Length: 386
Image (cartoon, rainbow, N blue to C red; front, side):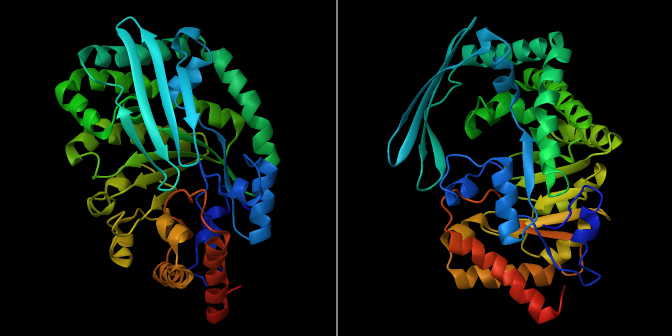
């Protein structure tokens, strides 16, 4: 396996000098490797060995937990009651939490075939539920502040052995949500989220400001544990308008990037969905970005002219993407190979990492995954690349 570190990743990603493409499939949150190994989950050792078998560069999440999930382990009154029912086709989950403003209740159904989740019963249904969500964020952040050192040391002790196990065989990272997602994503559907932002702008701002304490805390933990990168996921313009982006995302990206890079770590941004407007407005120039993904092309994304749009990426930034995960899942193999070749051609003069656009679906056929890697080998042979 190649040596891969936070320092040499820029060199490995730079193909303008005729090097072999760096391949780093998106496997955060995916059970693809585990399923190939016939396991319920994949250990760090499993992930490293699978990467070595297929010759790609792995990155491994050594810590990920939304604020409310983490703090529920440290505050009994914030523990949700969950009832999960699973059958062959779907997983249904009902979760409830008692608050001073009444019970919060949510009922979801996840379809295994489509990988989609829909709400049978939404969590936020009235004004009292909005107050309850505000109470959860307040209580979580207060607990974090009161027990800061205790929680921090527990996490560092948990993460350090994982970072050492990875060593220079892959990149270790902490994956975090931005503060707006800590407030919105666990509690609101897309529709109720926008109603909340529109109807309660001051409360939304206050809660997002409070949630920033957790973002800063995770970066602090990452620096002390010596991980390679802090990765965060943010929405594109299909979710947030430019005005909401300015208010609820950019200031926190700027602060997070500054803290991360001051600590010597890579700052890595995954933008879900539409990136074209963010690229053309040079939004990414406003904060330090070491690795930027996922450059998704239509219909899932809107990056339809990548060679042109690549010029709007900050100089020195590594781009990463952009084989559509649904294409890798559905095939056919010929199209997977031709699209992989096309991406390699279009990114030949850039610092670029070939990857899938998002997480590889759990049940992606192995032969489809192998086809992507075979296309890289065929491309290198045709171009005479080492």
